[in-house]
Amino acid sequence: MREAGKKVKNESKMKNEKRIMNISLIGSILFMLSEGIMAYLTKSHSLLMDCIFDVTDLIMIGPFLLLVPLLYKPVTEKRPYGFSQVESLFVVIKYCVLLAITVRLIWDNILVMMHGGRQVDGGRIAFFELAVCLGCLIIYLLLHYFSRRYASLTIKAEIYIWKLDVISSLGVSIAFFVQMILHRTDYARLAAYIDPVVAIIMACLLLVEPVKMIISNLKSLVLFAPEEEIMDTIRHVAEHHMDKVHYDIEFLDVIQTGRKTWVEIYMTSHNNLINTKILLQLRNEIREELRKSFDQVYVELIPSLPD
Image 1 (tube, rainbow, N blue to C red):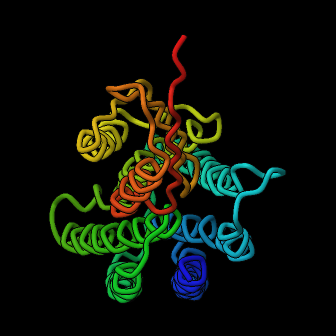
Image 2 (image 1 turned 180 degrees about the horizontal axis):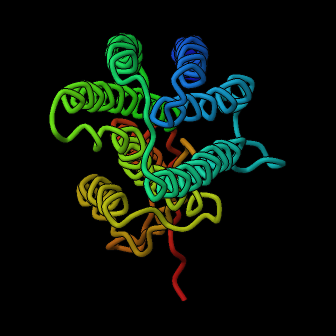
């Protein structure tokens, strides 16, 4: 009965995840096309930055939709970690590509500034980016609404990307409204620097998340222990339940990769006696509480044998 309920719950999660990724896919295609056309017409690197960001996201969403069903397959002897490491590898590749493109665009725009800037149609870009901002906000709110039921590592990354799109589009729009004002003042010559400066600022803001995600997911790939905060959370939950039955943690082994977390608790008993019924109940209690904080968590209690 419990296995059947778990299967239904996983199917519900998978459907919700596919729905979110499909919304993101459709949104990315629409904005990529519109921003690509406007970047070509206006020669704006700010719009090109947005377009490339969407292209990178789009390239990665397609293959991930094929990966989603595999992430819900149970672990086996052949695949002890399932396909969860593939998700971490997927995220690393995605952000490495984005990081490389972002660094190149920063360099290109520095060269543009050194050669006198770039004149673009600020009015057209300002109103276009304002419309893009509203469109991105709609997609972001939709994803945020559906993610309340379930949010995996990849879903959170998608929502973060759309949040950045909203902020960056609004920032670009404001910047080019400022350019329109500059053209009517004695500082009109500075207007040529608005586009490259905005492109560089956007690129620098986008550098932070890729670097963080690459480091985090590389740790998952090589099966390093998670951050101390996660270890403390797991230890606190385990100790809370184990104290009730007079068991102690001797060693805590945690592996986190992709959306899966494996917890092995090596334990001792105050009287050197282990009751298997209590052990089973204890494991289930710890696992149920950890599921409130972790997506797919596996818990094993391992009695330590005396020397």
